[in-house]
Length: 396
DNA sequence: CTTTCCCGCCACCTA
DNA sequence: TAGGTGGCGGGAAAG
Image 1 (tube, rainbow, N blue to C red):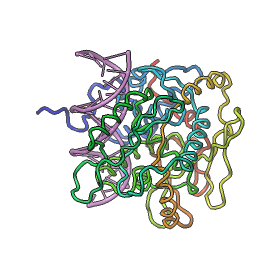
Image 2: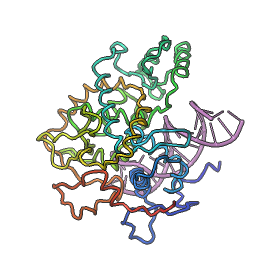
Image 3: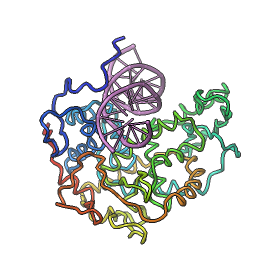
Image 4: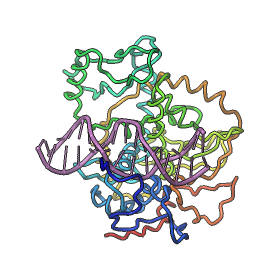
């Protein structure tokens, strides 16, 4: 009955007032504001706190405490950061800091994997398009697993597709006991890997969309559809979209994507900001292909002038290698990918209007002192982010 | 009203 | 089993 506290209990045991809106805290009696608690802002603060050369390992508890948030939120941030190569899980409660230097490589890998999945791979289930059943199963590649190939395969067929009653949680595998059992079996068996089931995986798949589509703009709505499959319950979609919002917010704060308004219609969408992932040699961080003519100005590239931390770079490789094993696949992605193209193709035609979006709330920005709309508004790289921000939590 | 998305319960996983 | 993780969706702020 007591059921926990109501939604927003302003402050309760907050040790520190966290930094509220980088400089926009002019109001004295600030009522509760979601912006100050956004994942985007939190992510920015996180980066400011840890993006320095002497950081090597991060403890979730310290992070939570320093940032003045509950652990739960740190998991959210960390999961997407890991998906983009900024962090690597080292142990329980512990992450190894890689930094932005790890991003290019991570993206390259994601792209390669995405392309591979897209082209190769058998088309799993026949054409039963309707519900494509979730995906969480993942047979996990893990290449090289000798005995691993049990007969699992896609437990896709599970629930048929229904058109009967809405409300049943479809997508959940649970019809054939045998199937279910074998699924669990090899799930536990050959999956020593991370349990990332969603946020992390979703992030990767979301990013893959950008890396493989020719267009670099997509709305969360479309993304959800693509990543989920065609027909879905309203509920699933809604949940997926919620997650995508979370992801998009942190990705935005990293400047990997940007929110924009789709052309004539005011439909919000996200645009990929870093054309990357070209297979170059090791050292150079990828980068940046000039935008095709259609895109507008502001675009940046990483790698161009990222801080070159050599020291880090050295270890970086070994660290990254360790984590290089991630293995998952988003088969759905390849199926749907095609769909999106057509959809997107017709959806938007010419220029979009990008508007300022500060997902991170008060990201920071004033730094460049007066960015005019229509011109290069965004700074160029993440670096600016750290420079401009001034963490207030000096909890060292 | 719709869109965005924070909060935190509690199932699940691991040590 | 305890504690770390993190799906998931209610429901409120923001638009």
